[in-house]
Length: 407
Image (cartoon, rainbow, N blue to C red; front, top):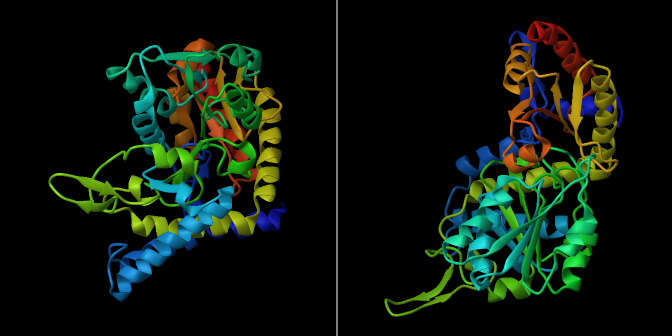
């Protein structure tokens, strides 16, 4: 992308003009959440000021309009990830909620001694929900390790499958290492053993083309707020045949067909898994984020972020004492690092004083930190609106604060 094109994109993100510590904000915390373009903000405002009414079953104009907005978003999500049907698109509160839905509902079929394959690079959201199954069933977690570059050991992954394996769940992109996993190959390996697959796409969905039919996964989950959209909105894609078999995750309004005190019948997909009033305003606005991704072009986004990643990595590697975690050749725009024995919190706090927003800590990936033998990292992550000038400002800030912390 040209400098002019990126400048034009930045015009739609007013927060990027904000000053922090007397300096213009340099926002490098996009892996945690992306910023939101004005088109999405305007859609949220419009939803609250023009079309706010509960969706479905209402016969009045506002309810019909709100319902149409929500269901248009469902159609657009279907197209965005190339799902077979809108019935396979479930709206949730986010990636975490989506994984919990699958673990709680699909996980009811698991029995004592069954095994679930995860990886050491998983976010807590793709670990804890599977552990919670243990309260009723003695399932075992088998964990795939990584090599020194932060790539999964696929030979070990293959070796973990056996007659007790009932699920494989892994991230598409690591939120710490940036590693882009070969999810299509990993899904094929699991399916060769008759094992269903869940892919955590939270970190892939803002950056990569997602085609669930090509991946052939059984479940794929992601969040709106990492895709330039509203917070509190997520998506669960599920293979229709599996969703049909799964019991409801929660009970209440919307997910029912008929209720008596003796018996309840459930609604058809996708509504069987959408109990209660959804964030229909946020869901309706999410379509504008999908518009932004489409109009900008995911190929353009990926190429721009890859160029920033290469440039920033080269600049960081020149800093004495720098340790970068995650050096896989196939990597997303995330750099996690430490400098000497400086605590990441100290570095993050001083960078903030200079207007640089980075994430510090274990990034909800404590098992990975234990595997790496560190308490946490500083993480800089890039989005389409970031620039080389911002990378330079980031490096300049490091040059200023590191001598202070080194004493």
